[in-house]
Image 1: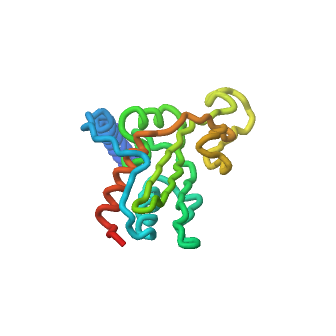
Image 2: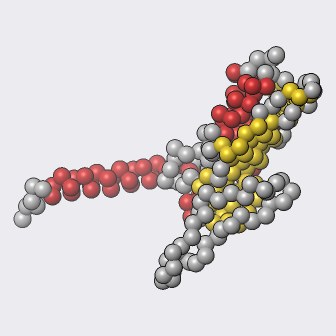
Length: 210
């Protein structure tokens, strides 16, 4: 018994999607489990030469933009012949899963697997501190776990509450109070290291002494 002609394209498309999913899934899992060569730890805060302050802030902002949306930014300025501190804060970003290999906000191994099995998010706070003959670039990435009101598959009929974009803008490094709907998990040191290495490479390649 043959299938109607109208079903053949749908069936072929479904089979193709299934095969593509299997191939991509195997690729993602194999990539996630590949051994990663150890890299030397980058100091945090990172010391960089006293290059042009505008270029330095541009490189830091461009790097953060690869992971997060910038929420607030204060550029380095000169006030009464004194350089002020620059800083950047970002919006929270739901972590990339093993099914999203193109996203780099979740590092390999535990962080990406955790973002796949749980709803986690991250946000960053970066300070660029002039110190006379150099800058100190201090990168902090915070990680939070979603705190659901009810189990995901419960029979409760109320409207579930989502807090994907909620941000406690009054938090600081010494007072990490819980945002509504989210549980603080501390800092993501692996992502901090990735950002610092990339900033170091960007500045070395694109910036020149004043």
